[in-house]
Length: 256
Image (cartoon, rainbow, N blue to C red; front, side, top):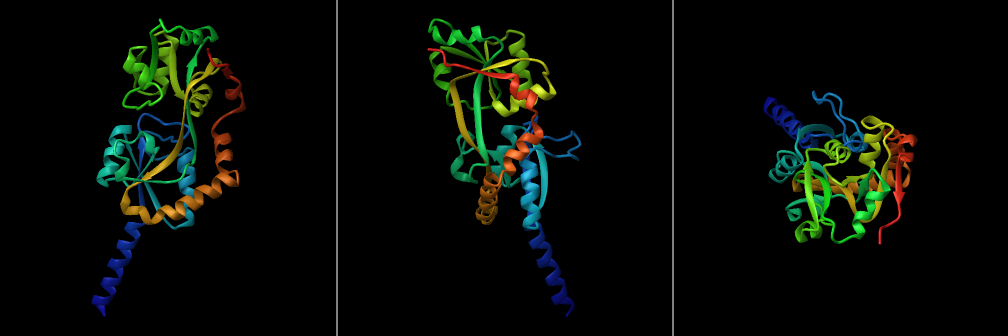
């Protein structure tokens, strides 16, 4: 009897362990998608809020592990973590992972501080200086970098990209729109940015899963579909972004 009880306790503990989601989150911040304190005691943002809701419904526990964008992806391949916010288009080895359906579109644009700067795109004689983020892949910009039409100037995070733009170290910064809106609210109040639609990148923001938790994928996709359709995703976006920030980012017409 004691042996049977011990076996049941062991099996229960193994089942509980398998229901833990180990999620890699980016350092530096990936706000408003991911936000956290240095002590990792307060993880929030659009994605953690969605995962909290999903995990509650399915009696899962979520544990976060902070790493760099590149380090997190390597840990995901090795199974040290089993989930990460990624798009299939950004990964080095997409065949080794499973991917959820889209959470929301992830749109990158060129941004300038003056509409006149956008005219540089029309003159092929100009070598464009574009602030990017180190270790990030930019399929839309790669032909420009390869041809010498543009120079890639890497920053450590999105905030450093904007500061380099302000200091005239680059002509354009290539940024995600929601991340820029969050920075307008929290880092650059009162600064006006101009969004250039040329070379816009549109990728689905997804959750990448290690195959060991592939059994969760159908339920996760069903939850994400519900969250998109019932307005949960839009509500979370509005929670982390102000209306004022949206008026500080102005779209300008494509440059011929």
